[in-house]
Image (cartoon, rainbow, N blue to C red; front, side, top):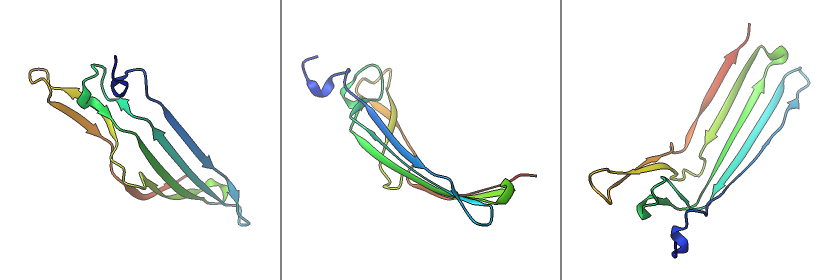
Length: 119
């Protein structure tokens, strides 16, 4: 291909994360976890239609978990896609309407809590 923007060979992803187990004096622990993913421009489908080329993106996620003594329960708060980036995950061209492309998009910023108990 002569157009470098349409080169099917280009595209890469970098993921970086950090998590740690911090013991507490009561026998429990805190476990912070952060991660980031950066992806260069890439193709969303294998037929290399120009409308299926997605731009680069970066996402950040974080969580903080409290682990009770003896692992009796855990409670965690989390945020995914902190920057609320629009991330396209896949695409397809309509089979009988060339040029019409549909795409899947990842969830927007998501946050919540998780609780688990062991017995």
